[in-house]
Image (cartoon, rainbow, N blue to C red; front, side, top):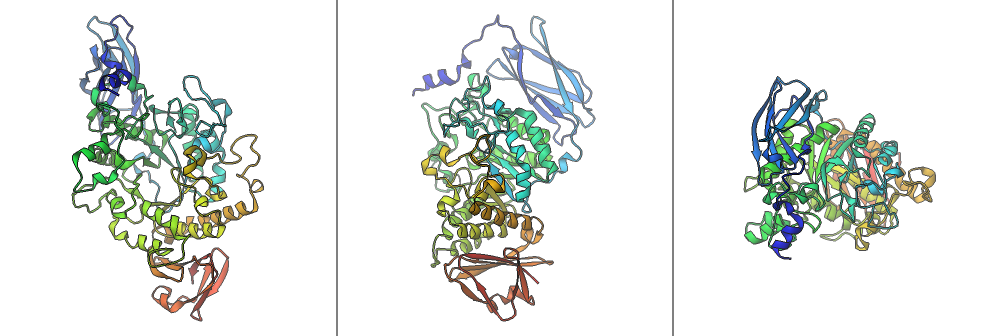
Length: 617
C-alpha cells in the first residue's frame, strides 16, 4: 500500500472543510473535571468544524485560561487551564467567538471529589483477582446485545462475534464471586470498540471516555463499581494506550499528522520486546517494534506527541476519579513509549499515591520482567513508575512443572528455580501471578483435565508470594486451546445466558467434579483472605526432592508449611531437613483435609499428587 493511498483512506482531514457549514462543538474531553486535584493543570480537547478559528474566553473564580493551542487541523483546539486550590465546584461558560462575532458557549463543570479520594488503597497481595471477559461471562440485559450506531451486532453462534455478555451480567454474579472468595475484579476492556468485526475483546478502543453501550454504558459501570464496593471487591480497569481502534472517531479527522505513527506502507510491529532492553539492538528494529501497528485495525499511538500523552494521562485520572477505581491494568505495557509511560505512572501516583497499577510484561525471563517494576535497580537508570508487574516466567514454569517428573531442571524444580531469581524484583509482594488468562490455553486443557494437578497448581498459586489472579471458569475446570482460535478458547460461562442448558454459577448446575474443584478453590481463597502471613510473610523454600516441593510462609505471628507432592507415589518426608523452619512446632492443622498432623516422630507421610497446607502449632 502506498503512502498516498494510506493517508487518503485514514487521514482525510487534510482536505478543506466547507466554510459555509454550521460550526458546533461536537466534543470536549474530558467533559468535566474536579476541584482539589494535586496537579492544577487541565488540558481540554475541543472538537468542532473550524473551531480553530474561534477565540476563547471564560470567567470563573480560581480558573485561569493559560493558553489556547491551535494545531494543523482547524477542527481542533486545545485549551490549557489552571485550576487553583481556591476554585469551588460549579459550572461556568466557556465562550468561543469567531471573527464575525458569532459565539458558541459550552457549560463546563468542576465537581467535588469523593472524600479521601487521593488516599484510596489499591489492590495488593491480600487480594485474589478474578479476570473475566465481559462479552463471554454473563448476559444480564439482552436488550443491549445490539445497539444502533455500533457496527457489530450480537451473534452467539459466531465464536469470533459478540455474544451479549454485559455489565449487568457481571453485577448479577458478584455474590457468586464474593462467595468464591474473590476480593478484586479485573475485566478486560469495557470501553467502546466499534470495529465491524471481532470487537468482543474490546482491545481496539474507539472512544476513551465511554463504556460500550452493548455493555451498558457509563452508568452501568458506575453501578458495578458501587456494587463491588458493597461486597469488598476492588475494581481494576483494563486500559489500552499503545493503540486505538481504526474506528476511533478521531481517525477520520486526526488533530495532527503525528497523532499516530505513519509509514510509507502498512508496517506491523515486529513484536520483539527484547529490542527495548538489548544493548546491541539496531535502531531500525527498535523503531519497528515501538512504532509498528499492533494490527491493521489498531493504529499505533504516538505517545511522544505531548498533546496526546496529556490526553491519555488525564483519561486515566478521570476514570479513577469518576468510577472510583482501585487499580489499573495497562495492556501491552512495553509496546508503549517507555519514557512517556514513566511520566504517566508518576502522574497517577502523584494524584493517588496508594493506587496500584499493573503492566502486562509478557517476557519469559525474570530479568526482563523485573526491569519494568517501579524503582528497579536498572543499569540504564530507567524507572517505569509501574508498581506491579506480571510474572510470566512463573506462569511458564507452572505450565510444565506439574506435568513432568522431577529431574535436574524439570518438574517442580521449575518453580523452585523461578522463585530463586526473586532477588531481581524490587517489590516481591507486588507481582501478579497466574496460571491462565484470556490470551493463553486454559490450564485444564494443559493438565488434560487432571483434578489432582489442578489442586496442586492452585495450592501453589494461593500460597506463594505475589498477587494471585484466576481467570473466569477455572473454578469449574473450563477448557480451551488457543490453537483452536481465540474465539473458541474464550467460550461462554455456562449459565450466563437465559436458556443455557445448565447454570454453573450454582452447585446444582455443576458436575460432581466441578463442585469438587469449586469447593477446593473456595476453601483456599476464603482461608487466604484472612491470613496476612500469606499476603506479606517471608518465604523460605527447600530444594525439591523426589517430586516433593516444601516451603514455608512465616511472620512473627504465624508459620505455614506447604507441601506439594507432584509424584504418583506417596512419600515419607524426614522433617529433620526442615528443622530451621519447623523449630519448636509439634503439630500442624492441614486447612485442606481439616486434620491435625503430628510432627513429633520426625516423619510425615504425603500421598501422591497431593498438597498440604499446615498451620504450625
